[in-house]
Length: 277
Length: 277
Image (cartoon, rainbow over all chains, first blue to last red; front, side):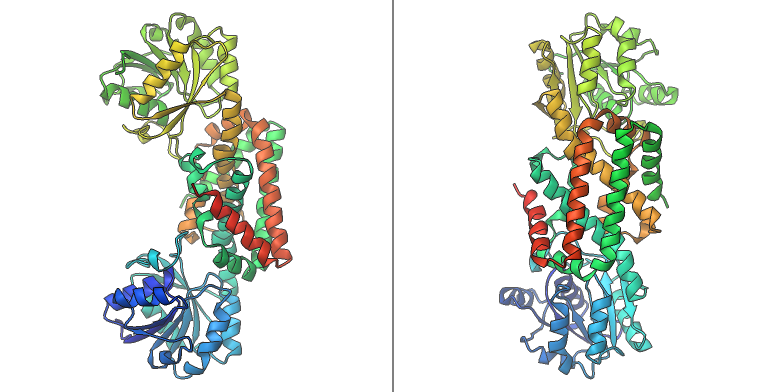
């Protein structure tokens, strides 16, 4: 596929596992490791992984691309373990929701010339091998974050990888990525989680929700450990976004307190227009 | 349908219009008024309304059921206009998202014995006749709020109306309804609107959102005037729900500030479990 013959993947969750399925379906040789033995066996049985790897990740050395697809909080340690086997790897990439800290880890490990951070906008509240499927990345945006020392050839290979799966690569600076995602993804997740926890505290049961309430709490089902890692890793950007949202809700409440219909209607109108175009 | 021969409807928006379509499809004679002439004509042309009514609503007198399906802020005035023609009406009901204030208006107008507040959980961010469709209420929950003076026969007729359309009536006190809906519907709407406005203020464009961010802002497209009316009418219940949410977000932010992974993971876990069962 696009001149890519062999790909090694560490982590067969929703993103890593779906990536393995897509690549195998396109004739790419996939080697992979997952800390859960049953997952690794299931992926092998499904034909998505041709060569299971052991925890040393030594077997990944022969691949064209190494993809780190473990939770954000685990990523630096796994990359460190893999590093000795990546000395000749043309492209080392990942799929995490934050890009700054993993880029720094890659730089520290001497992989900065071939590491291109990656983040496909294809996650969901589902998780694990059972949630994987082919076509997950079709028409998805994939952020690519080449560091300052990254080789042009590594960026091109990362773009080719995702384009081959029907996704659209968008190159962005790692810092800008983390700032943007704090608003577009991490803040929405924090809201869904806080709303769901607030509803439970207020004694509301899930079946009391209508279609709108269900939309607004769906993300709360996302894996807790995964999101703890993302939120902490991007805390610097997420905190001001949360503070902005708190102020917005306090203003909403003040408009109600003052029975200010004109201000409220302008706010609802601003919310509507924010989504146009 | 269920012994219901004629229904008069004031307002042919998403809910009133879809109700007209469903009733007409089941052989019920539908008379209706809408302040928008083009809407009334379209509903007539579509066969959903057999007898267009004028603004006096005088023609509704012959119906078995009068359904008030105008925005919450307009409902009391329209009910007052209709009241002289509802002296013999076995059931007067509505479809608004708040139930306390309209019940009080009905009581003031001397309609308390036959008024049963109604609220089908079938709204959406779409609006107007163009958004109407048959089957909107299938498998939807419909809250029914009989006042203290309501006739048992009126409650039974309201239940028969919605059951005939495949919905599930749930009887609840008007005050309890408004308290519950502040959490399950009005708070989620306020969050979606505030989030969308915050994203716009932060310079985020709609196409920057992934699937999760889109879920969390979908409701912001809801009609501004309609929701201004709902929020103001239920301000007393909505304000403490907003304050609770502000505190929840501030706690989330404090956990980030303190890099408290254990507390964060417990919070994400609480959010997950809130949706189970």
